[in-house]
Length: 273
Ligand SMILES: Cc1cc2nc3c(=O)[nH]c(=O)nc-3n(C[C@H](O)[C@H](O)[C@H](O)COP(=O)(O)OP(=O)(O)OC[C@H]3O[C@@H](n4cnc5c(N)ncnc54)[C@H](O)[C@@H]3O)c2cc1C
Ligand SMILES: NC(=O)c1ccc[n+]([C@@H]2O[C@H](COP(=O)([O-])OP(=O)(O)OC[C@H]3O[C@@H](n4cnc5c(N)ncnc54)[C@H](OP(=O)(O)O)[C@@H]3O)[C@@H](O)[C@H]2O)c1
View 1 (cartoon, rainbow, N blue to C red):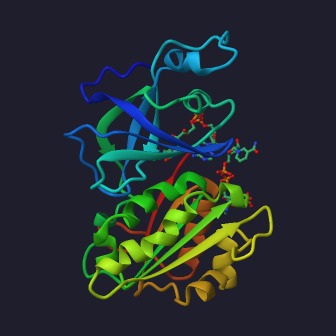
View 2 (cartoon, helix red, strand yellow):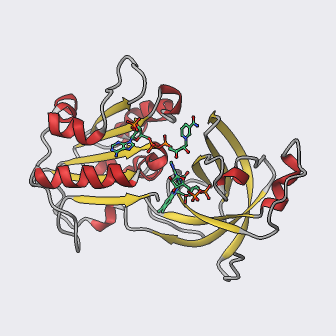
């Protein structure tokens, strides 16, 4: 459906990186007035008929109307461009078209940022540890937070656990590896950062191989992080696959942690579908 809101702005695709046939990232121009908090999402729009010329066999019938979907912002609130990380669902109305985008193409951006998976939701005094747990493209909001210096100033130890089906789908690993040096190094007392890659459908050296709730129940995640998840010391954010979010949330509650409401409590979550 065409969104006729005044908040829609045209943005231009500046770069595209393909991770796997089902995963890609892209950057677009950032409208001057557009502000957001790390962890928020926007509604991105595409008009399939405008991308049709990129398809080899472009005889397919595509709708000549704008389609919008929610997308978390990967880049930091201070970056000059906006970055996004996308799945390709072969029969998905949005991504089956979006996958064809190329540098120079136009997308639509609703400049109202949405979402409460932000660190500003937590009231002071903050605990010492921040745990960020993601599956698939659910990594996106955490990359934004981790490129915001305040996150490193606010917590003593940040743990990022990121689960993908196979190694090729574990995107952004190189960026993640530089975060501690780039941002941790800037705070007076460098924050400790532990990255825990999880690959569930093949064996990969240096990665765990079980799903997040199982790793919590067995104590393996805490063991690798070298920290205990506790009501007193931990903020935990969970993002991605809704079944994972639900099971992880329930497991954390069984461990004594509480949902964050009105600033109080440990756990904040976001479902992607
Ligand atoms: C708050 C929020 C933030 C989001 N941020 C992102 C983001 O940063 N990157 C992104 O790729 N998607 C994100 N999504 C999902 C996105 O809005 C679309 O669902 C996705 O682009 C697929 O659109 P589609 O029309 O092709 O398929 P849809 O018809 O929307 O989805 C079809 C099915 O595909 C699966 N699916 C949908 N999205 C994903 C996904 N991201 N990973 C794995 N399986 C999925 C689900 O089984 C879903 O039922 C977000 C969703 C929400 C609610
Ligand atoms: N055709 C393909 O080759 C292909 C490849 C990738 C994605 N896709 C498409 O993308 C969609 C899925 O994308 P995705 O791989 O990013 O997302 P995903 O299925 O959510 O998998 C991402 C990670 O989340 C884990 N996970 C899934 N359900 C979980 C749960 N209930 N609890 C804990 N962890 C859980 C997965 O583990 P498990 O491995 O144990 O499930 C995997 O490590 C599919 O709907 C499909 O259409 C297709």
